[in-house]
Amino acid sequence: MIRFSDVRKTYPDGTVAVDGLTLEAPTGQITVLVGPSGCGKTTSLRMINKMIEPTSGSITVDGRDISGMNADELRRGMGYVIQSGGLFPHRTVLDNIATVPLLLGVPKTQARASAMELLERMGLSTSLAKRYPNQLSGGQQQRVGVARALAADPPIMLMDEPFSAVDPQVREQLQDEFLRLQGELGKTIVFVTHDIDEAVKLGDQVAVLRVGGTLAQLASPERLLAD
Ligand code: ADP
Ligand code: ADP
Image 1 (cartoon, rainbow, N blue to C red):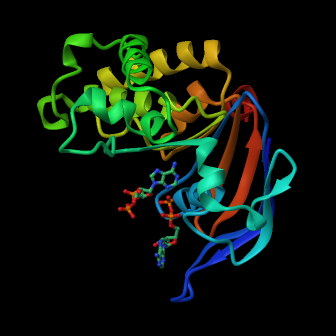
Image 2: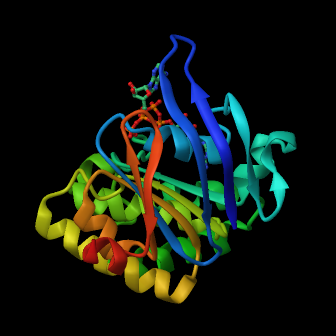
Image 3: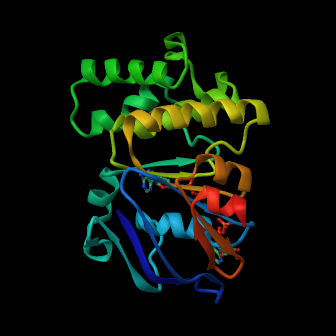
């Protein structure tokens, strides 16, 4: 479980991005942060893996305050997926997926075999393995981005608008595949989107943020729809 306790982030120019956020992202569930542009979603997400330090308040992961943890150690347990896919442009699809496992010391043949399996699980043909990212469609790049994040089998996944850069039809496919996969894997997921429909579809729990970085509502999708 990830827990935010009265977390604030003020940037050096005085912008208050997150203002007293308290919430829990339960283990094995999808918690969606939703709200308009500038409400502090990305800042909140990046505080979880220490890309950004909170100005005050605390964040714990499984009861451990992350302020005292080494960032590299923390990130070993966290996959990170961004909108553009964030793939390494000069590496093949296979190498993109296998990079982290190889860095972690997984033997090469095993890393490659797992990468191929992940490609298939993301609904991609293994014949794409030798391509470079610019030889893939946007939707394929997003799938590879998710596969790469899953390759290290992290218990936690941080996802920042991962399906936003693709057209609506592909987005729906990606959402469905993602839900199916999560049904098997049961990761602890924090998912950022500005799209309320996506939030309601994917979230076990939805945190609605307002501009100014405050929490407007924390509810199940069913409750949000009823309100
Ligand atoms: P969201 O992801 O919801 O669009 P962000 O977390 O990116 O929101 O940004 C929240 C607020 O903080 C916005 O007002 C944004 O302009 C501001 N902000 C983000 N990054 C910085 C930064 N490095 N310096 C100053 N202000 C920033
Ligand atoms: P920007 O929009 O500021 O360019 P990106 O989202 O592209 O930011 O930045 C991601 C950065 O975080 C990259 O430089 C990358 O090296 C680093 N990074 C990669 N994986 C992780 C991870 N699991 N957790 C935190 N940071 C990561």
